[in-house]
Length: 393
Image (tube, rainbow, N blue to C red; front, side):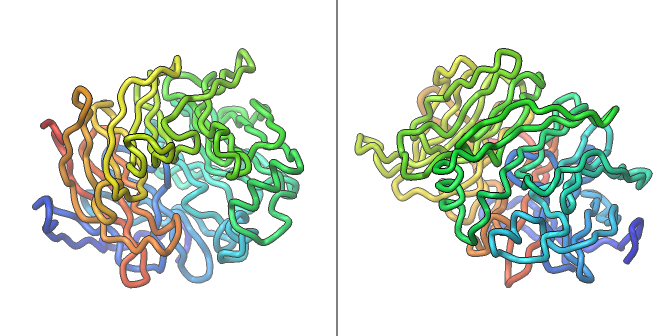
């Protein structure tokens, strides 16, 4: 179908067996329906999300109404999957885009995405599309991000040379470290398309980076090295104006993927305790202040389960898609030295499908909706739950 095509609602509803919440299935056609992953915003406004999906031999970007269910095709894709997946030997032809390379502007209703080696933008209301930046053949793009004022797109660029062997991520990290290959953060203005190298690192693999919600002078990033260097800090705060990198002393130096608090006063991270101490083998969730001091830490397990963390817009609650159970989305509210938890729903995803299969729960900016993905029966679809007053104790 062409760009601009409008598809009828694919919605269906059911009651979650654990929480009793009503869950809305938003998609039911196409093989893979995947919303933006990790910390990246996928909400165009309070009632619409963007997602990527494969259809008719190409990956396109779509907008979906959370209320009416109507789906609009925003792009006419030129290929399947993105270059990084292709180089890693996963799938696709490497000329398209995917959910790791799209970010939505909540204020502007614009979607920014990488297709092939080009940063592009499309307006979800007008369908106007344009090219903003050519990445070039020597670089491969990591996960896109957008500044809080929606004026700058952040491109984490990885050297193509580190992918010159078809191996797993650990080997890519080792290769970057061993050969001191440079990673680069580039900022691209959405107003005048000017680009600027904001940061460059030799020997560190930077695939995840995010502007502070309140400042484009602060960047939270993972400066990854050889995973066997277990004491090497993964999570850092970059002060761009001072050209200073500050390590966050997380409970485990090799912490999990991390997110900013919505007010920019700190970050949320998680990981597994492996130091042999009292909490050895447990999963931790940790909040750190910008001065790197610990604001709060909570433990669960063992057993522990891998998961992703997302902070609600009011900053009061952390949403996880694992940690406590392998198949449930849980709201976690810090309280003193402990926390309250409340089940939101069973996500039921088949995690064997890799990162694209993970639930990656995101809460809308107005705190009304939680959107997640689930791979069931070999097919990935999107789901939503209305959420209010999460985990108040």
